[in-house]
Length: 429
Length: 174
Image 1 (cartoon, chains in turn yellow, brown):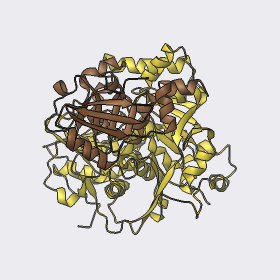
Image 2 (spheres, one colour):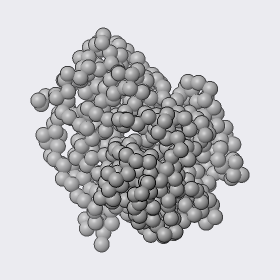
Image 3 (cartoon, helix red, strand yellow):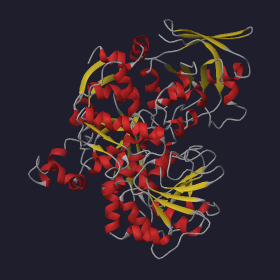
Image 4 (cartoon, chains in turn blue, brown):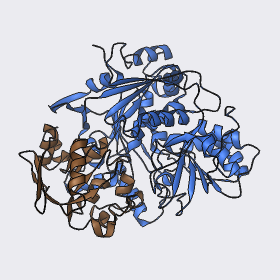
C-alpha cells in the first residue's frame, strides 16, 4: 500500500520502536527560542548534561520578548545567548538580526522538504509548508532533542484536505484556514497530520502555505503539510543550488516527498472555497468563525498585524494596499510588526512602512510579544483587538481582552473603519 | 513514581487551554516553583475560584481537549508544583498529553459515558481517588458512594511514569 508524505518522512527517520505505535525518530533540526529553552538548558546543567547533539543542527532565536521588557525576560535572553556561545551554535539570531521563529527559520533556508524538526513551540507546525515533518513539543522533548537529536512520536495518521474551487478576490489564506478550522473543530485533527492539497494549495505562495500550516494546531493537528513543488524549490533556491544542478533536478529530488495515489488517510475532505468570503472569529475558540459581514457591529480598540501567521511580506503588502491613502480611525490604535528584520527591510524598500506610518500605525520591531500578551501591544480589560494572529483564547493578548482573528486585509479595513469590516479587495457580499 | 491519589478538582468544561492553565505572562519565570500561585488564574469557568478551589487537590477531572493551545510545559509544571500529577479527561491536546507523561505525570483518557457518569455522581461532592497504577484502575470515593473505573495507558506511557519521565528514559537508551 502507498504512503503519505508524513509517513515517508517518518519512516526514513526511525531509530527505535520502544512499544506500541510509538517510534523514536532522528531529528534533522532542533529550533529554540528564549521562552521554552532556558528551563531546558538549566535542567541539563543541573543534570551535568550541558551538551548539544550537533551544534550545526540546533538553531536559536530571541523572539518572544525582544527587546527584553524587564529583568526576568533579560535573564531568559542571557541564558539562551550564553548557551549558544558555549556550544558554538552559529545560527543564533539576537535583536537587530532576529525575527519571529516561524518566519525567520524558513527565511534562512533551515526548513527543507523531508526534514524532521522539533521546537518548543506549538506553531512549529508551520514548517510543513515546505514538506517537512515538524512537531511542536514541550520543554522535556526539546531537552532530549538538544541532548540526543531524537524525539518519540506516534506513527502519523493523516487527514487530507483538498482545497478546490475558484478563490474569490479578497479571500486570503487566513480566511481559508479559519474556514478549515471551523469545519474540523478545535480538536478535529488531534494527533493527526493535515495534508493540504488541491489546486488552491498548489497555486499558493510559500507565505500563504505557511499561513495555513501555521494554524493546523488550532484544529489539534501535529502539523500541516504541503507537497513540495516548484514554488518550494524557487523559495529555497539560494540555499540549495549547491546540492542540485538545476531547479528541475531539485524538484525531481523533492518528488520523493509526495503522497502515493493509494496512500491511506484517516479522512479525506473536499473543501470547495468558491463561495467562501472573508471570515473572523467571534469567541474564545479559533473555530468560532463568522462571515466578516455579520460582525460589522463589533467595535475594536486595537488592530494588530504581524505574528508567525501573518507577519510576512505578502501580508504587509496586502494590508498596505488596503491602507494606502487612508488614516486609521481615531477610535482605535494600530500596531504592525514585520515578522523578521529582513521583512522589515523589504517593507521599507517597497515603501510599505511609509504607508503604515502615514495611516497612523505604530511599526514595531519583529517580535511575538503582542500575540500572547507578553509585550508590545497588551490589551486592557474589556478591550477588543482585530488581529492577524492565531489564537483568540480568553486573555490571550491581555487579561479580560477579546481577540478577533482575521486576515491582514480585513484587519487593515477594520483599522480604517473603527469596527470589523470587509476590505475593498473583497467584492462579494 | 509520583503520587496519583488524593482529592479531586472537577473542571466541568471542554477545551480548557494552556493560556487558562498558566497565562503567558508567567512564562518569564525560570523555575517551576514560581508558577505555583498562578495555576488556572485565567480560567473561564463559573463558580471556580483558583484562590480557594485548588488547595489540597491532587487530581483534575475534566472534559474534552484539555490542554489545547500552546506547547508550554509550564502547564504540567504549574499542576505539579500544586501537587496535581494526574488529569483525567475525555480527551487531551497532543502536546499537553506528551508533556504530562514526559514529566512522569499522567493524562488519562476515559470514555464520554464514564466522564459523564463521574461528573454527574461526584462533581458536587468532596471526592477522593485511589489510583491503582499496576491494576489500571481508579477507586472513586465520596462518603458512602464508591465507584471503580478501569483505565488504560500505553505501554510506553507506563514506562515513562515508572522511569520518572522521558529524559530519564531516553538518556539510558539513546
